[in-house]
Length: 148
Image 1 (cartoon, helix red, strand yellow):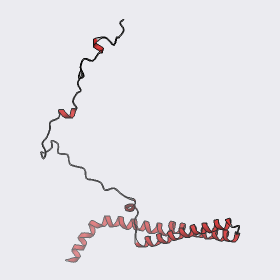
Image 2: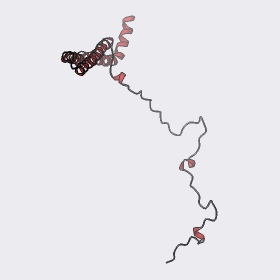
Image 3: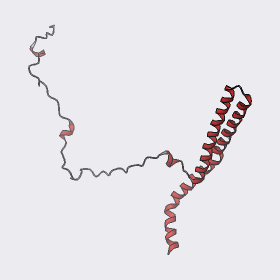
Image 4: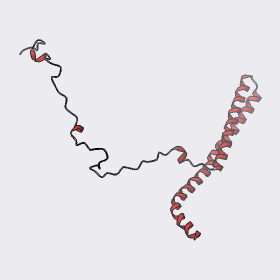
């Protein structure tokens, strides 16, 4: 069996364009002019609105009021933690214990507000919003009948 030699003619390139690249399949398709009707009568799908977290979590003025109280309690808890840490640094047990009590009390009340008050208000707002969506089509004709 013969060995391939780089000096053989078939292994030497004679010209640069020895082969040719096939055209893509899209070039074989018929071209349409701008503004002409499409061959298929497919309708465009409606664009879906992206749901954000603010759309999913309802907010009412009462929820906002309780959420502000919740934030203030968290800031108080952070200040209590700072007081407890500073009391330990200066070796004053009374200051450290007072800071720790302030911290625990503020965090406990904040958790209670979040789990009891805000959760109840949020659940009620979700129910109201769901009832508003379902009843929106039904309420419109009633308002028209009352006005006449």
